[in-house]
Length: 138
Image (cartoon, rainbow, N blue to C red):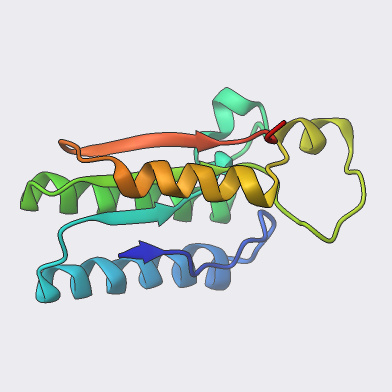
């Protein structure tokens, strides 16, 4: 199972960022348990590691929702013994022109993002891995 659904706006409201993203992930984890899924990949965000990246000195609803999602996926991996990956993509907008220096440094292109997802799908565990998906191929 690859879970990509979310409100991707780091400035999202409580209802959309925290409640919406967290409830969506909780729903996916429950479905994985009922369907006996053997591998789970969560599209998280570099915002889940805000202190390390220096993105903000305050926690946002979006970052909190991504951290909560990662905790749910980690619990699923620990409880089922199946492998999981929380993939933390950087700035991704294939239609955008050059971003500010900070976001441009975190930008990931389509080819790199696909490679990161391929690697996540191939990972066999054990447990739950946190992986970053930033940068461009070539």
